[in-house]
Length: 273
Image 1: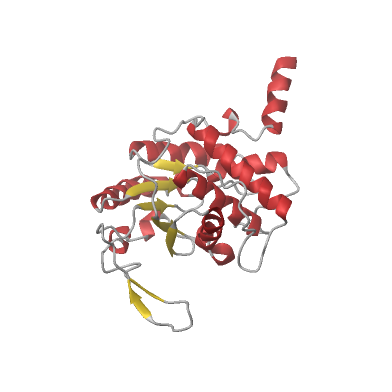
Image 2: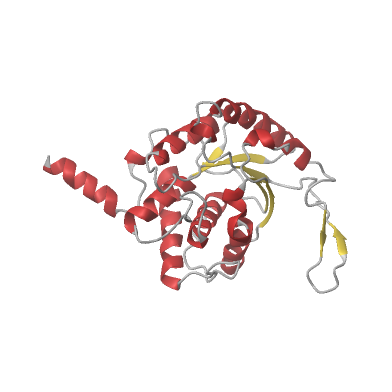
């Protein structure tokens, strides 16, 4: 009994990923190439707080990491709502942009290697991977999208989302379901859900979701972005001076804490040294 209590206590006090939070281990633990152009496909879990892409951009710039992101999101969407193959057309997303230098000049982007994106992060409906009626669509479209993404030379990646604040049991359910499907498609899975659980074990006072118990607060989006960045680049977000976007900067101590949680979670989940 004492040994069991001690193990439980150490798990709750450690920033490492606790085995109780997942049982399916990732087959793919790192990308073969660090991407510099990434497409994020998902829903409001990505676009809340002016978009997780803006947080990834802020973190990467402050760390001197070259990484550009484009986001394609639909509120409430599962992977079955997205026409990912269409997003990946060479004359589609990110084929042109408007300059932010005050001139508002339209610029047509060129990609010497022929690839608009080098990686695509796929995020399903927040219940999709474990819902009795939706999980079949998650599995089906995960396979379809993975195939289409690979045909362009990009790497498919899956984002593991977090438990609702009032349903902590979802952490393990989502972790295992998402990792299993990622494994079936030989794809990396980003453990954002485990990072949320880890952070709350350490700091239950920190609000990572808003009043609806599922959408991220600014701190939640910050942690999501830091976890994505760490997984994509295999570099720690620790030390980043960026404190958040959308006029919602975090306190320095909270940002530093979330950076550490993101790195420790990713490192332990993948078994990195």
